[in-house]
Every structure is written in C-alpha cells, then in structure tokens.
Length: 334
Ligand SMILES: [Mg+2]
Image 1 (cartoon, protein in one colour):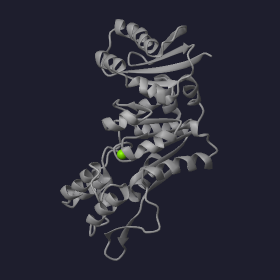
Image 2 (tube, helix red, strand yellow; image 1 turned 120 degrees about the vertical axis):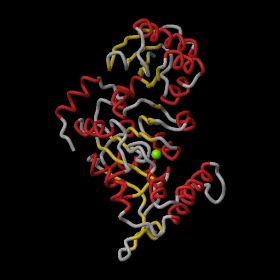
Image 3 (cartoon, helix red, strand yellow; image 1 turned 90 degrees about the vertical axis):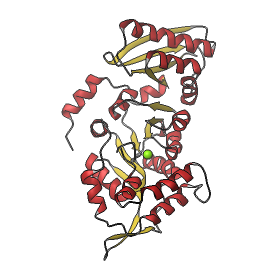
C-alpha cells in the first residue's frame, strides 16, 4: 500500500541552491534508514515561498505513518542534526491529512503568547506592582508544587492577588501594552476568507479575549471570567463561580464542541498554542501546532513551528505565498 508523506522545509536563513538541491535527498535518506523502506517514489518538490519554504512530497511503499509517528521522526537525532546543519525547520504530515487542509475547517488559537505576544496575567500584575508574587505562583505551578499542582488552583491563587485592581486596567492594557503576534491579523483574515471558523480559547480573561475576538473578527472567544465590583470598579480577586474554568481539558472539549456545532470533522481542525495547557486540544485537532512553544511542549506536540510570523501556519496548510497574497488582497481589513 502506497502512502504519501509531505515535508515542509522552512529556512531560517538564506540557503544556497546546492543546499536546496541536497535537502530533499538527505531527508528521504534519513526516512528510508528509519523506516527500512525498500521501494519509494519521488520526491517531488516545489517552493511555497521561493527560497524560504519548500514543500516536499514523497510516496513510500511502507504502511501509512500517523501524524504522531511523523512527530517522532522529526525529533530523531538525524533529523535534528539536519535541521541544525542547514538552519531549517521541518514540518512533516501524512499526505492524506495535508490534502484535507484545502477544505475550510475550524482553527482554534490560544491567546497569551500565541495570538498576542504577552501573558495577560503577568501584565496585570506588573501594572499594579505584583509581578514577583504572581510569577512566584506561576513558577511553583510549573515545578508542580502543592497546592498549585493543577491549573485551577494556581489560577485562583494568582487571581486572588489581583483583588483591588482598577477595572480601567483593561483599557490601559489594550491601548499600550498588548501587541498582536506578527501575522496574526493576516492569518485570521485569510482563514476567514477561505471559510474557516475561528476561535480563541484562553486560560486568560474575557475582557482581553473578547477584545482579541472583536479586533481579529474571530467567530468565538472563551476565557475565564473575573468578578469586578460595579460600584468601586475594582477586581474582587475572584472568578465568577458559575463560569467554567478554561483549562487544558476544557480547551480540548471546546474544540470538539465547536467542530461538532459547525459540522466540521475533527480532522479538519487545527489548534495553535504555546503552552502545556494547549497540548490536549492539539492532540484532538486534525493538526496541532506548537508555535514558539517551550521545548517540552514542542517535543510533545504533533507539529511545531518557530518562524517569525503566524502567517506561516498557512504554509503548513499547503498554501503558497502567492495564493496567500491574492487572498489578502481580496479579504476585507478588520
Ligand atoms: Mg499561551
């Protein structure tokens, strides 16, 4: 049974013509060594972006590889050495999955350090001089120290520190602190033009997540609700009791729910995030992409991307730069 595999090679620096010529052969040799494949066709290749992003397809007589097996292959020492030697990043997918991305699906995004470049709770804390206290809890949580072993406990502890913060802080953060990740606006414009449903699923807070949704014209936003005192216009340091806490498992459930609500098969969903609490949603998405994630998250994610622009997600979906530019010309500006 023949199966197709697709590699997307992102150059981090300018590569010579001979490097571009050699790379496909080197990747296929590593693959053949790893799989012990005997009879193979290809590879065929084309630039998705001239001189920067190469698409390489390869048909093998071996049994089809799953996305998980592709991820394991990309983290083999031989592939890591190839990436280091040529200063490239290789994203690998089963050909069957790759071809599905041309149909509009559902794209869900984490917010903090994914669609925007900041961690909102850190910025809230910094604005009121509590950064060190909040960061200490974040770090204790990351070390798995009780009582912060679960996301909810550490979230509640950090939110409690924000008691008394003026609610005008949201306007201040939007006006002067929060910046969108390069390519975020354009990526969403293109996806929407192509008919994709889009969502932000955030472990952060609704005032910012809703603003991100409105600014980028996303279809959905889900985040945590903070209680504020309407008379004093301050945060009470509590979360709205009846609202669900958006943690890793909730993100996973929301992705599946939104896909079902829109009659989109799970394999036509993508999830993009940077944190360990994005791994569950990445795991159930057709394609999970760790974007500028921590090394542990990159290792556990189905695919990872460390390029300078979120717009490169469209290359992972198989669109050429010319196609993206054409769509951007037609697509309305938010
Ligand atoms: Mg994040």
